[in-house]
Amino acid sequence: MWRSAMITKLVRQISPLGTIRVQAVRHSHRAFVQDQKPIQRNVDPTGENHYLGEPVSKRHIGENVSRRDKVNFLVKILTDLDDSKESVYNALDAWVAWEQDFPIGPLKHALIGLEKEHQWHRIIHVIKWMLSKGQGTTLGTYGQLIRALDMDHRIEEAHEVWVKKLSVDLHSVPWQLCHQMISVYYRNKMFERVVKLFKGLEAYDRKPRDKKIVKKVGDAYEILGMIEEKERLLEKYKSLSNEPSSPKKSTRTSKKR
Image (tube, helix red, strand yellow):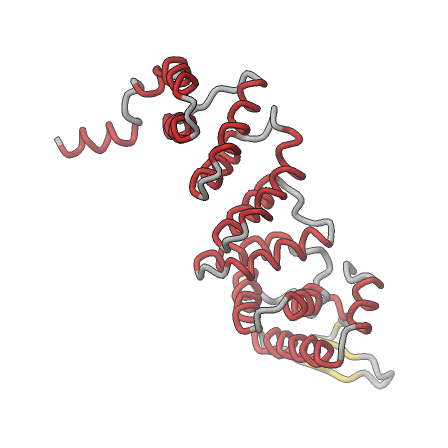
């Protein structure tokens, strides 16, 4: 079972209030699972519980619950909690303790649900909890964390995540994440960082794939008074401005005609 002695120790050490909250979440989870499917229970003379005539261990508690129901249940728990790191961490520890394997899939679907609700602060807590467990350490997770920090107006923390986790491999970070970070700097008027990041990408001979990137970097050069650099940039990547419209737009135009 995935539940380790570390989680058990954590649950025992939390404050009385946190203990009550975790027990409440566990009770709700158990009741939620039992409500999903009626279970025939027999009592063996030896005292061992049987479900449908077969002994069932504790790890089977959540096996009859669909992924969608688990995700919806978790999103409801997280949405109803007070806005504190301890409450979120305790609830997640209690929720994941019933799983045999770490439920990275349901957690990512829960994050998507929280994004739809614009629960940026809660998303940050969930992702940091995942990372503290050594789970979800992917480029996509860090990109999602940077987006949540930016939307939560915590730009310096977003910058710190970029510097420590992504920019160390600037030669291989996907352009999508690079564009995301350039946009974060540009939107927060950090034009020096826009220029520095773009020059770092150029140092690895990485060329932008979108004219929007060129425009943002060009604007940053102009605001910083680096007119010659802007002209050099526009001349170097002028082919991007002359690119035809995307196939999707062409198709839509043809259909309209």
